[in-house]
Each structure stands twice: as structure tokens, then as C-alpha cells.
Image: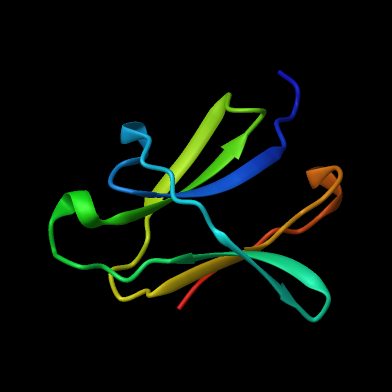
Length: 93
């Protein structure tokens, strides 16, 4: 099997299989473009929980996990070109 590279990062409200993708806001920080998601929870219901998905090999593999309930914002630097040449971080605070 060949290596699968990260193709995208996404945030959903509710479990990722429910396909409730949230559109990030794009912000420029120190000349770099960042995708920013507001993730403040409005209730304790499971359907209001936010999840991050790291998607590899053009949707062949999805790795997902819930975003901590205490997080109000998450961000990642937009990557351009080949992802295998870059380090990618997903930061929540």
C-alpha cells in the first residue's frame, strides 16, 4: 500500500458521519492564511459537540476526534502544494 498524505482538515458540529461541515473563516496572520472555526458549545447535547477530521488520500481515510468542550476557537494554517512537504497543526484554545 502506498503512503496516504493529508488532503484536508475539517470541523463538524455533531459526529462527522452526519456531514455537518462548518465553513471556516480565513484570516491572514503574519502573511500566512489560516482557517479558523468558532467552536464554543451552546449546550451539552451530543449533537452540539464539535469534531475535527483529518482526511487522508482524498477521502480514503478519515481520522476524527471530538474537540475539547472547553475550546472556543480552533485553527490551522492553510497548506498549499504538496502536503507531504509540510508540517500541519490544528490548534484549539
